[in-house]
Structure formats: structure tokens, C-alpha cells
Length: 68
Image (tube, rainbow, N blue to C red; front, side, top):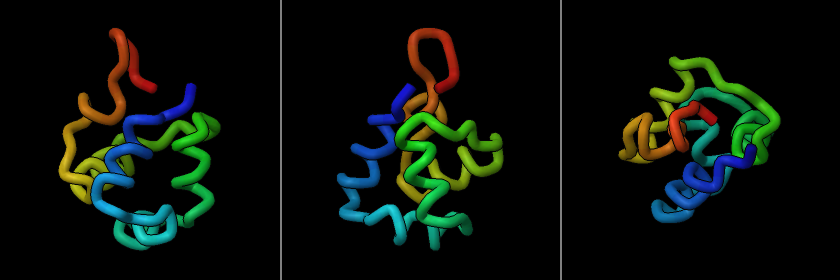
């Protein structure tokens, strides 16, 4: 399942995938795979992404009773 919430939050801050990747310490490809729904990030990575995007886990990774 695509993570459009994360992509939208990144766009709100005018951050590229590369910029977000550098902030959280992963590759651009990892960010791309998360947004496409092809990678299930660890909880620590989810928390780092949330901090970088000023969002909560619920904001970015929770949908209708399940984690994306």
C-alpha cells in the first residue's frame, strides 16, 4: 500500500526524497520504496521520519486500524 501521507508531508516541507533520506540516515531508494509501499520500515526509522517531517506515527503510518 502506497504511503501517500508521507509523500504529502515531505512535499509540505519542500523536501526531496534525497534530502529526507540524508536527515534520517538512509538512502533515497529507501524513502522511495517506503512511499511506494514496497518496504516496511522499522519502528525506529518510522520515528525518525516522523520527527523530520514534524508528524506523529498516526499521521504518517496508521490507516484504518493497521500500520502501512
